[in-house]
Image 1 (tube, rainbow, N blue to C red):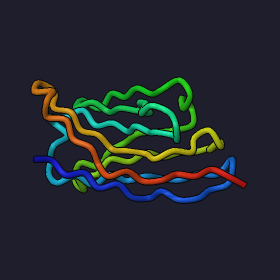
Image 2: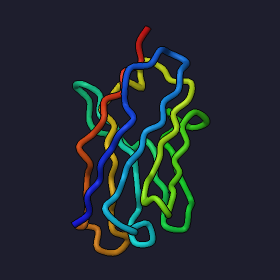
Image 3: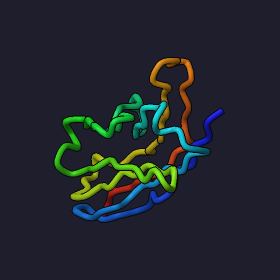
Image 4: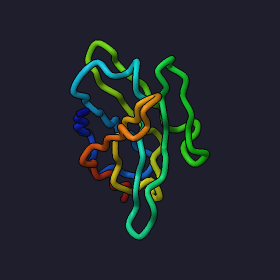
Amino acid sequence: QVQLVESGGGLVQPGGSLRLSCATSGSIFGFYVMGWYRQAPGKERELVAKIFSGGSTNYADSVKGRFTISRDNAKNTVYLQMNSLKPEDTAVYYCNAVHLVHTTRNYWGQGTQVTVSS
């Protein structure tokens, strides 16, 4: 069982920055694809960014150039650096881990609220 704990959400003005953290329960990055998703009120959950075991990344078009996903293997933590935030980035952000082979091993954190408002 993989446990994921997000932190770092909050209220920020448009144009501001936040960094989200996702602490994992062990050294899983070699076996899992790590991702950040978000869900705004009344909308479906959507992919924001992923980082693969080899370190490659991909992003939703809406966040390219503004958000960066990274990880610290020593700390077993994944980050999402969010810059130039817009009101439409307001959502609950979730950390996700999916096993590379056994994709039914799919875990979610509890979510952290990000609100972008003046």
